[in-house]
Each structure stands twice: as C-alpha cells, then as structure tokens.
Image 1 (tube, one colour):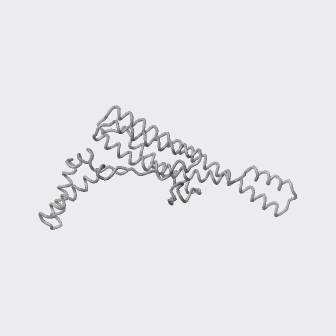
Image 2 (cartoon, rainbow, N blue to C red):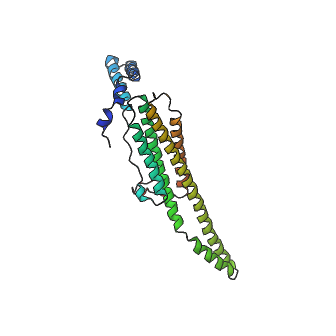
Length: 251
C-alpha cells in the first residue's frame, strides 16, 4: 500500500495547495480567528489551519484491502466475487491512462465508492456461501423418503407430528433455495453493472474529457453501492455468517 508521503506528493495535492478553494479557506479561517477575538495571531493560525485542512482533504485515500478472500469461498460465490475484484482492478488500470486533471480526480473519487461496493460484495458472497453450506446439510431426498414412509404407515398423533416436522424441513430447504438463487442473481447483475462502469471509464480515459460531465457515471456508481448495501443487509438477515471467511472478523 502507498505510504502517506507517496499519497501526499501527488499533482492532485499540489493543485489543491494553490486552488481557489484553498484561498477561500484561508480567508474564512483568518476571519474566524479574528471574530473569536484572537487578533492577528488568531487570523494567521485560523488561515493556516483552514488551508491545511483543505490540502489534507485532497490527499488520496489509502486503498482498503478486500475483507474477504475468494479462496475462502466455494463456487459459485468464489467466481462471482472474483469477478467483482477483477472489475475493480480494471478500473484502476483505466485510470493509469489518464493525465492529471479534474477528470482523474473525480474518477479517483468514484474509485473510493467502488471500494465500498467491493467490501459489500465480499460480505454478500460470504453470506451466500454460508447459506449454501447450510443448505447442503439438508438431505431433502432422505427427508422425502422418510416422509413417504411415515405417510404409508398407520395414522396417529405421533405420525402427524412426524409428518409436520419433516414437511417443515422441506419448506426450510425450499426457502433457502429461493434465497440463494435470488442473492446470486442480484449479485451477478450488480457485477455486470460494475463491468459496464469500467467499460465507460475506459471510454473516458480514451477521450480524455475535462471531468465536467461524467455522463451519469457517478450516479450509477452510487446506485450500485446503495443496492449492494441493501442486498448485503437482506441476505445477512436471513442467517448469513457472523464472521467473514478468511478474516475471523465479525460481520
């Protein structure tokens, strides 16, 4: 991972040091220092502090490492999550073809949002992986065979209770099947939308626009992140994992 020094010594931070917003921040900070009664010294301190905050805000954030390892997942979740990670890496590759400027700055901001999407996708895949493992422990063929045997035997209160218990197991298996299929389909769609985002980013890197208009790319990324978060909450509420595979961290 890049050190703070490497992230600080970038053209983006250099531009922030002399930007109009930095100058405005200095003026506002100086005015605040005077208003609180600190006089000229307060003006200097307030202006310098406001300028420093503006510059620090321009320092690129350190990339967060993925919270889930694909190797800790079983198929189909491993391949699906690997596809999300690959899309994130290709987004970075597209940015390497851009010259320094407003467009690169805005796309780096989108990269931060995509990091959130990757984190959410990992937790979704982990939850799906847990649900799949739980479903595998329900032997529906054996349950159905036992159910047929009980129904073919003599009726009675105990037989009825046994039938109800066996039918409950089959119903639980059916619900798990539906949840797993829905989670997979929704995550696969979001992965495809991330791929589309990367493709549009590549297009922007080729045209080298001025960054004033991302063509709705920022809105789409926000939508992807929002839907990832909603899906993760929904699938974890169905009985997803309490810890992330490969990390031991509580979800």
